[in-house]
Image (cartoon, rainbow, N blue to C red):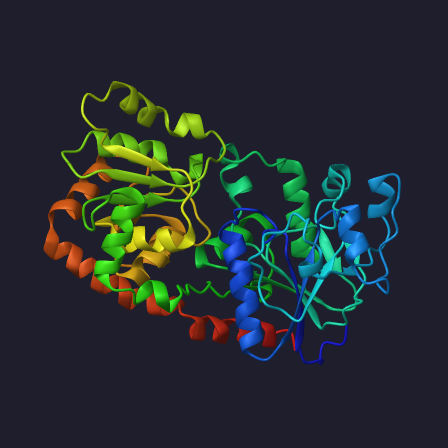
Length: 421
């Protein structure tokens, strides 16, 4: 690769964008595409989905399909040739409809998921640069490289290595993949100084090859500027909730989110307004919600805790804006998107006093020890009953959130890309 070449066109992976309910990484990928296009870059998107026979028949005949092998391991050892992919013509594909507006869509089946034995051996899938871009920005650690281009990887965190008991990942395969990425990437981008420290600690790579750009938090204006009365009406109609009369946690229900301790802390408090838990089932969800289930089964009055498993995007921002406080006492995050979203909405926030949570929130939140139910309880009560403090936290949150606006994010991103040239 000619390292004096200007980076003007990008390939971005659609690994997480293809998930039906999306993830925090899907939001990151969507935002990255939008910001790259804002700065007049050509952006192409690569999926790794299996296309059905019907979908293939609906695609233009001029498309060259990748060769199909009877064994995936043989296919994986050869350079993959992506095919042009017209989303509007592949109506029976698994891809959700809300994809970023980019200049082109491509697909290479299984390109992000080669056989596990190859990943453990530190092997990476090669992708032919038929889209003729200058760089590939992989928004998630994948064992994949684009030929004849810069390869940039975002490592949001190292949870499987820092807290191995918190994930189901194959730790050996994950370690081998990240090690290969750190050895071969032209640039590694991460989203907090804490994650940057973790990457250095485990893989000991030069400081110049890891750049923290944070990420942007860009809630659509129609959600931020919506009249308070309309927010109240929509919350009442959708969930029977009144503005300012509930505490909100939102996110996947999994061990690192620390929902179990949050529930125990809330139930031991004197708080009378309900705790709303909004989020889909994650790993070990039954373990995390054990205290919640016990409470539901034994409650004599209406339960003090309510669960909403799925929340549409517009209702999520209504919940954030309508909450008396957002509680997010996570054990580990690379960035912690709910922290920044709550601050942008001006909603008082409780989060953890360690790692990226403390870094992102700064002094604009009540910081608690996430391993102490007593610390969480005291923090919840403080935010619930101190209206002056809530007003201060809301104002401080809005000011702090400016650090993560799109203009500053694009500046950091462009600076990172420029370091390659």
